[in-house]
Amino acid sequence: MATEQLRYSPSELKEFEELLEKKINSSKSELEHLKNSILKSQSGHDGNHNGAKTLEDGAAAFEKEQLNQLAARTRKYIEQLERAMVRIKNGTYGICVDTGKLISKDRLRAVPHTLHSIEAKMNKA
Picture 1 (tube, rainbow, N blue to C red):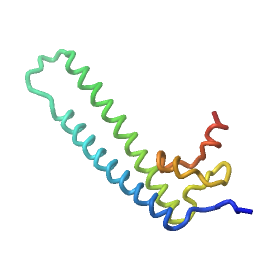
Picture 2 (tube, helix red, strand yellow; picture 1 turned 45 degrees about the horizontal axis):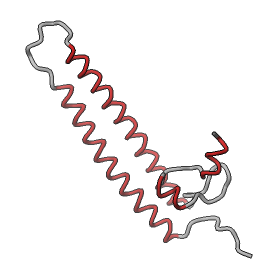
Picture 3 (tube, one colour; picture 1 turned 135 degrees about the horizontal axis):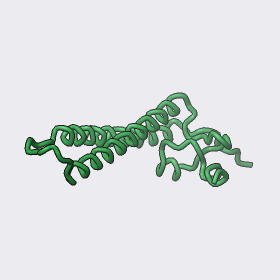
Picture 4 (tube, rainbow, N blue to C red; picture 1 turned 120 degrees about the horizontal axis):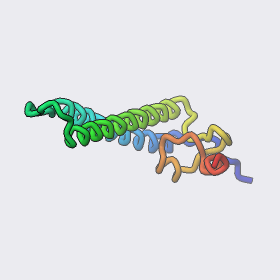
């Protein structure tokens, strides 16, 4: 009788740790790019305004808001990835918070910061 695996092995966790590190690094790079874009949009005003709001002003404000929202989402994603790294260190990574069962490797590869198995996610829907 096969016993159900309760935790991932150190070598399996190493694979996920490397995946998380890559995603954290690329997300931090993306966030830096977004911050630079936001700064450029703030300093990009030219001096030939006659006091009237132009269509370009509205488009620039919209673009800046979009960049800010994307930066906020990217920061949140980085925080989720970093919390997943903590779970690797404390040995709770890959365990569904709802069912207590291991989350499938395929799901963790697709969504490495997840706390929920597909089964638990479907039950919430």
